[in-house]
Image (tube, rainbow, N blue to C red):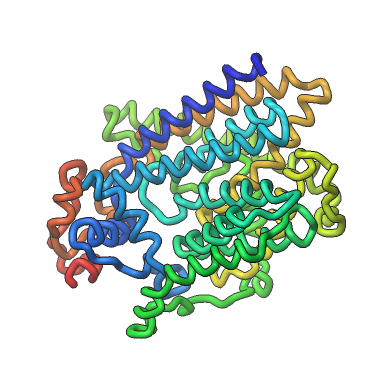
Length: 450
């Protein structure tokens, strides 16, 4: 452990520093304004909005979890960055829970590799510094894994209640959380966990109570219900969405991030010529890293899934050990991911798998650790250090060049608005990067007029 501790602490410190940097450079677009409105109405006006943002399938997200999560930090700090700091805190807690799980099940090598592949991942870093529903889901995924592992031998009432309640809250934040109950069912079926029935029912009852205001709102206005776009099992009928989802699993174990994340523009930080050169270099590094790391992810999953159905066919043995439990969690998590992608009524987008990000990086971690134990420890160590270095470089590039993290109003993420509003001033949005307001054809959220 003494040889790996500096690497572990260095990866953690770098990831934490980059997360804070991104939080204070994050911008506000249409989705963020919609969420901030819900939180601001709760904190400033005492009004609770019992439904979330619009969904890609039409309607609005069920429940008021987003209103509470965005609004509560504003009681302490009336600023648009307050709920983003909470997101950063939830991701830190998610990493702490998962690292603790690895400490119980495997060794220090896996912990270092997980710190690099998960905590320092450009995927996680990018989704840590701005307000958006999927960004909360890292913690939900971590609670999913840790509560199931804690019940591998015997059920626990409070852990089962927490597990079910977490699923309920996550479903209120984003429909992609459907992965959680599917994975839970598969893991229970194959003997990887046990469920305390009364505890699970208590968690379900708590979730049901939280949905009462939403049910009342839907009764008054049925248009709040989703279902206007797409249809379930679309991924099976049109094969592309399912293939895209499977590819997303591989991409999460690599640095092949979305193209939008790599639209670097350093004009606000550097002179014109230097900005152009820096942008080209950053993109070049990003594309090279994407290719190399995707090859690693493919090799890792080929090794991990060399017998694709073994996790579904065989029940978990209680004496199999922690590494076998993690492998089963990831393998059945992949099967659950395919099922969730097939159920999705629309084509899977990059952010719709963040709930399972921790599971998707496990094959890479377990494969690299197996290589290290087979006598290739020095090579694995060097690659991990290089991987971490490139991740930090991309994190800095995103913080100063990505459209989400610099003042680039007028882009699709930050549409012109029809009116100004006191909320924009009270939350300091205009002070950091003035919104474009007064456009008769601009976008607007009707909640601000009510």
